[in-house]
Image (tube, rainbow, N blue to C red):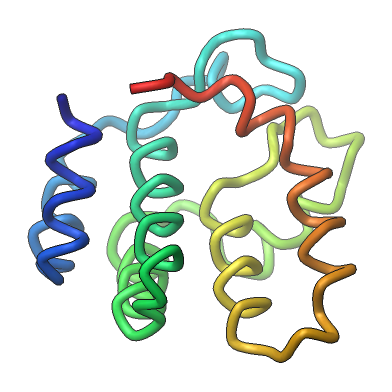
Length: 137
């Protein structure tokens, strides 16, 4: 499956390969990007999120940071990071929470110490609905 290929590339520290595969996938559709969507998230978003979760699970912060930065610079070019952050917190804009901002915040939290546990819990709780709609490989 695509998920396994992404996970194996992440574990093999082939972040450039992961990024190229993500680039080849289509951007989210309007339905996939809508607040409260019932469909699964876009494949590109789900695979980005899962890959970052794998990297963080094995404590590979270097590659997690690299993938996030490269994704923002090379793939998520239609909106700035500031626009994405604003939309992530805006419950009235009609857009689903952005996967790239979720993983950005998750990486930043993991870079901090144990005092950030409440922030981690808030982040996961608020992104839970989106995580719950992801395909289970």
